[in-house]
Amino acid sequence: MLTNIRVLIAACQELNIDFEFLHPNHNFVQIKINDNSYFFLNYATPFNSEVDASIFKDKGLTYQLLKDTVSIPYTVSFLSPFCKEKYRKYLEYQNIDSIVEEINRKFTLPVIIKMNFGSQGKNVFLCKNIEQVKLS
Image 1 (spheres, rainbow, N blue to C red):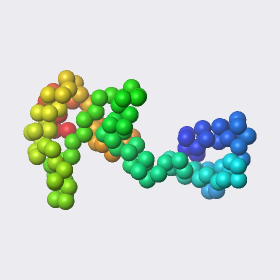
Image 2: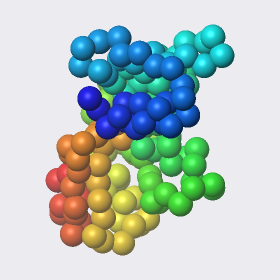
Image 3: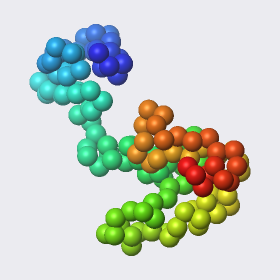
Image 4: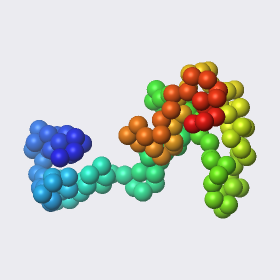
């Protein structure tokens, strides 16, 4: 059972909210509140729309949304210059060198570089010098 589901179940038990496991792995749960059913599946909740989920999967969008209300590390997002042709109109920086220059201008080293949509520590780089920034 996933940790978030364990927490959900503990909250349901504490608050006397009816719940039912709908799959043997216990990661698909239905809770009932006031004759309304809510389904939790793995890390997905019934409270987030597709838009909400997209925002919170993207570190840059999350930063833009929360920066004025939540203490969150300063974040700058860059679209890869190697993106598909249909996205090239959104490029602010046309090549890696211009991205590296912008990172060097906005941050002091060391700096952490990671993918907007990455998770679980994959593709996270601690860059101690500008050459490492360029390689990440």
